[in-house]
Image (cartoon, rainbow, N blue to C red; front, side):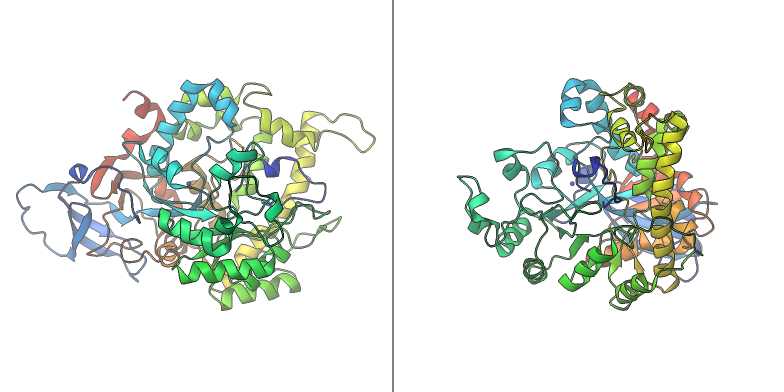
Length: 522
């Protein structure tokens, strides 16, 4: 992320984890016959009513309408009457290495809380319909840890390519550990002397890191266009000629390039570099921002921003709004936030209790953010209410800008991709699964229809990831990642809170068993 001119300190702490990995073994998959269901799928102009969908092992074998045939031996028949069936959702921007709001040291100090949270989070994603996740900063080692859970979404990863000293690396990684945890860290020409003994700079060129991540099973590459959080521009950044070389190498290897960029100048850089996906909306239009930004109509953008977004639209660049990122920083200022019952669906009770503990424990990150707003110009302390008001005064214009930019792309039929950046920072206000549900409502507020949201979270993501053979629609031959829900997702995104069954690779899960309080009993 990129922040305002007064330069919040927290942003550098966490960087905004074979093709498919099944949620369970093939033996867990069932032969399913879902009858009398309404199929809602993005390739269809109209729902397919009174449909029968047959699943064998991990694949859809048929989708048909009309009178259902008698069930075959060994089939589990699911009554879909009055229910809606959609493709499983894809969140194309997550980070699975972190427990939201906890540092590695805090996880070590509270192993029982951390263990329970890590066991629950795969279920939390599934609870809200996310059957496929794309971890934009991961490695095979981290993927293996995630996939050790008995129940989890299908998960793929991008290899992340930060530069030495640049954005994308948490502060807590130093020395040799940094180079172990970030095997695709780039060494730009002239930086060879900064490489520690034992690391050959020739293994950290664009061509070398792309070859390594491809061999490791990455399905995409993540690069970073980020030079700092308001003036001065203090972060080293990938040079444009190196970025272009990286993109060329990735494309030669068949890997789409996602580029972190959330400001106007950084999205211009991403376009020049040739990125396929811009992994953020645009919440910074001018740096430094105007002293007194004025509200404008939804979808209205400045001439400079219009020029950039017009090119994004014309080139069909994937564009992830990630509006919920900034709300993840503002929401902890709400004293009632941790009492939200929705948190209890996705978080173990002990984790929520820990979030309430004062800094330097659960409230540590919120205290760090609040410190930037705690003083009056004369140096005197503000009241809690005044701190919150000050924070909102800073963030509200940025939220308006990213919402307006999103609305502009939507109005001009740009290629919106659904991604949440969960968690975007060490905030407890970006929770797995729930964060995506809230992001959907942000997108609707920015002018997207529920049908457009469904497409962004299914077929559009599958196209960007070059996975349409397996994902994105309810069609014969596709992987059996499906959602069965009570409410119509074409009518409202609230339908994703009405999911009753989740199918991952043919394995059918009861949504009620995925709720944190229920899962803990098992």
